[in-house]
Image 1 (cartoon, rainbow, N blue to C red):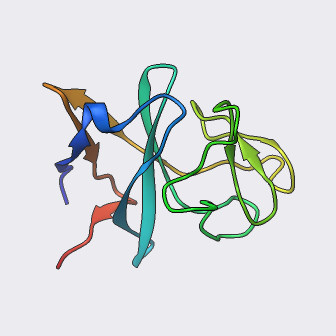
Image 2: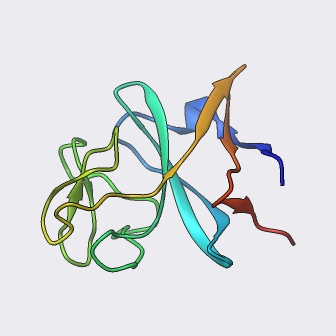
Length: 123
């Protein structure tokens, strides 16, 4: 299957350290949630699965940043991740990381890119 580029949201919907935009992908044959955030001016996206235990991380809908806006945090076990790389920076996920989703921005729109391991959800 060739790569698809799918519109996700307006670029202004993602604010540094703010709320995420969630979306569904197919990963490993299962529908999973993913989320897009902005950190230091760059849009980033990851599967919404903690590297410690594959559970959704947000403590409230679309809230992944800690109070400082510096770290992504798993609400269940307190694992913290670098927003720009998804690498675990502390907690029970040591040595792990979040699964990235490729994004691009053009003409005020954020798009996500399908890949061999991530496909759009078919309705």
